Structures are given as structure tokens and as C-alpha cells.
Image 1 (cartoon, helix red, strand yellow):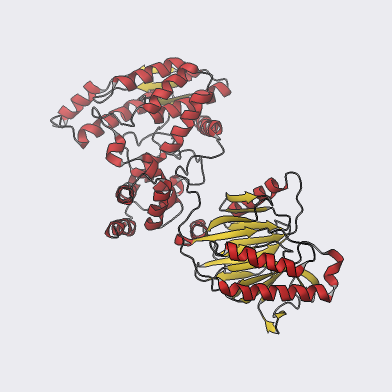
Image 2 (cartoon, rainbow, N blue to C red):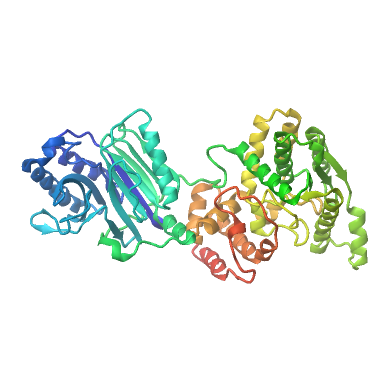
Length: 584
């Protein structure tokens, strides 16, 4: 498939125990169907024999029939270019063991065996031809630049360093067994940073990569498809510092080619928003981190600016929940309102009403006069330029820092991860704080958490107000009518770029391709234009991130852990994004 995706077919046709010739025909029939879409086609541990054959595995008639079936499947594979992995019984120096033939282009490229490998190397499978044999061996797919390993059975602790692991099993179906196996596969794919596919003779099939379950099904479906992102796995290992499998461990190379088909895998348009709905837990994580910092700083109060916008509302909700849980007087939460030149009646009223609904302390200090005097003092004529805007943000920061000292309170920042990535903050203004609970919460995540709060909160008045906050266009309100997304573009796209381009290390071209899949209403040209904005702003504003306070790590991806020099130009990323427009 395109961009490093490998379409994998997990197959469980209806087979008959011991009817090897019949099973061979069914496998070939299934391969013909799956090969129209898939690059890798996988069957269970005992596919050729139609399940475990127990004591019959010691008979030459069975072993020879299995060899013949594998040979026939190999001949059949000339009609397509997929890699077929099929389980069969084989005899080695260790006795009769489970084996898997890796078949491609009309021949058996290699055999993996479930043994310690004694006497297995060069094991003759068919027609007197020796093929590479390895116990749970690792094989290389040059066209995809990835390694693949085959292992057997229910022992999920049998860990190999390959980027794609195929587990052939004869596990029996039990109550809850599919969900247990699916969870084990998901956890392993996350821990090992790999793609992991499990196929059982009983028909249970599950596959995941990098901690995301791609497909999971019972025997009712003969073929289950999933698209493993080998490119993402390789990049994730590189970013994590894991070494790619060395050639010295590779038993054989398999010349599998990509079908270059379009990706049909579901592309999450909101990758920072958890699908398991842990929204209340997110607020608890933020609150607990604030409490930990309060304890370390030996203070009993928190203070922050409340604008009536989404981000500061998120901080207020997290702190209110924390103080209620810890039985701390909510009056120790100090929300400072500081209306300026661009503050709207809507946001001012929402901030005032939220303070009343939450029962927290309010300090109201309008900043217009102070900023006007400051602008006069520096000889500024009042033009609505960057000086005019930044002066307001810096005035607010000065007020908050001084009030923090006056009330012996921890100053909390409210800027979110999306703004931090884009540098959408004033250096020495709203960029300053002593701790920022929003530092790894993107705009799309905050919207989701606040929507959930409105649906579940017992504070009906607060929920009503926050619903209006959610409906208010995002704006720093430094000049009247200012709308952030009119300048930057939609936060949904920027969060998507942040997750895939920076978080996963994808190319600009792949990121745009996936963005179009996730957001089909945006034209390719529009997506590229916003990507250019993201890339230029991301690298130009690293100096702000390097000078920012600590925050809360809510997910695995956190910019505070990205060590980037402020002088890093990012010209390679900018050039790649600009070249995409030339291909229009």
C-alpha cells in the first residue's frame, strides 16, 4: 500500500481436521480472494491439517501430505504477489513441531519452526530443495524496509525484536478469550513498538500496531483485513531510540512488493482525543499535578487569569474539581479578570458568571488605562499593531505575577499545547507562569473535555455557561473582533499536523495524504497551505517553548520532552511542505 502501510489478511476458512487435500484447496481459494487486496496473507498454526491432529502427527503419511499441500500452495502463489504465511506440522531434530511456510512468487522463501532450531537449518521441505529455516526467525522485507517474525502459540512473552510479529496459534475459543487476546496484542504492540497480528485455528483474529487495535474478529468472518503502518513503526522506534533489527539476525529476505493501493484504514481526525472517554480522568490528572506543585511550593492557593475563553475555563474546572476532592476551600482559587481593549461583553459576562457558579475568589483589574499609559510612555501612537497587542498580554502577566506574590499563590498558565506548538503567545506575557496544567492539552482535547463536563456535571449553571464558552470563537481579544482561526487556520488541522508530522515523524507528503483522508471536506491545496503555516510557526517559535515553565504530561507526546535548539531552522520541513504545492 501507499506510504509504508502493509495490508494484512488474517484468514480462517472452514477447514476439516485431517483432511489435508481439502484444506489445501480451501487455503488456495482463500488466498486467491485475499490476494486481490492484501500484501501479507496469514493462516493459523495448524491450517494445513485443519487443527491439531494430536497423536497422528507422528505418522509419515500425515507429514508427507502436509509437505505436499505446502508445495501446492507455493505453486498456486505464482498467480499473485502476496506473501502467504501458513502453518503446518514439520519434522526436525526436535521431533514433530509446528512450522510456518513463508511463501511468495511460487516458492517457499523460508520456514519458521516452533523449536530451538536444532537440526532445522536447511530443512528440506519439498522437492529436495533446501530453504532457510529459523526458530521464530526474523525475515526482511526490503521493499518496505521492515522486519517480520513468526512465532507460535499463546505465550505472548515470546518477544522478538522484529517490527512486525505474526503469531500463529491453535488456541481454543473460550468465554472472553478474544477480548483477552486482543488486549494482550494491543499491549505488546505498544510496548514493543511493533505491528502484531494473532491468528488462531479457532478463528479468533486480532491485529494492532503501536498500541492501536486495528481489527479483531471471531470465526464468523473468514478474512479480516488490517493495514499495519510499517513506516510509523520504524519512525516510532527511531524517535524512541530503539535500534532496528540487525541484518545478522535475518534468516532470509523476502521480495514482497507493495500493491501501492490507497489506504482504507480509519484515520482519526482527532488523534489527541482519547476514544475511551477518559475525560474526567484528564481533569483529575491535571488537578493532581497542580496539587503536587502546590505542595512542593508550600502554598495553599492558586491564581490565574480567567478570560471567559476555553483554555482558562479548563484550568478553572480542573482546580475546582481538585479542591472539592481534597476538601480545600474553593476561595483559595483566585480567578483574575483583566478586561482590555478587545474584551467582549460575552466573554466578560461568562467569566463573571463562572466565578459565581464555581464559588471561587475573583479579583477584577481592568487593564486599559495602564496599557494606555504604558504605550504613551514608550511613544506609541495607539496603532493596533503587535506592540499594541503584546503590551496588553505583558500587562496581564505583570499583574498576575505580582498578585501571586501578594497572595502567596501558585501562578498557573492557561496556554494550551496547540498554541504552544504554533507560538501563539506573547513572549514575556501569557507565555509566563509558574506551572501550566494545559501544557500538553491540545485545543481539540480541551473542547472534548469541556463538552463532556457539560454533559456530566451536577453544576447545571456552570455547564450552561461553559456551553456558551464552547460556542464562542477562539480569540485572544487583544483587538475587537479578533478570531484566532481566521489567522492561523483550523485547530483541528494544526493538531493533526502536530500529532503526525512532529509526534510520529511522518513526511509532509504522508501527513497531507492522511489529513485529506481524515478531513475530506478540505481540498489538498487548503491542507498544504495550513501545513506551511504550521511548519513555519512551529520552528520559528521554539525559543518560547525553551523558556516556558513546567506542565502536566497528559499523553505520550509532550513538547516539553522535545529538545530542539532555538536556532534550528526547520528549513528541511519548510522546503518539503512548499514542494507539495508544486505537485498540484
